[in-house]
Image (cartoon, rainbow, N blue to C red):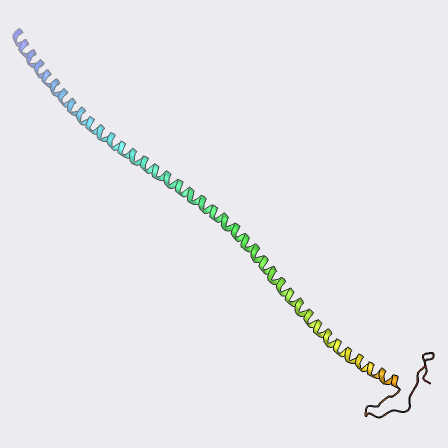
Length: 166
């Protein structure tokens, strides 16, 4: 009985020992499998993190480039506004210069016309003066002619002391 018990106990211990070894082997296999899975997950996560960082770096570069483009665009817009203001000023100056040129031309033409008018008036006044001088000369000679060239009566004398002819 003791022997039976020993054999049974030994058999049970061997069975238990086999089960424990089997369990440890299974546990080791599970641990190895879990380790491989964890390593794969780590490498996957590292890859994802690297891709995320690269994407973040690329996005940051794009943000900086976009910011630079926006700043450059704003600066170009500002330069265009300044240029447009200058063009408007120049345009206004040109319009004023053109208007001044038209006014100057109008004044020149007006003066020219007035001068021509004065010249014509001067010619007519000279003719009147010439005619008056001729009439005065005839009156001083004492001979007055009609429109047909005949003498009209006798000589008349004028006195400077009276207003009436003698």
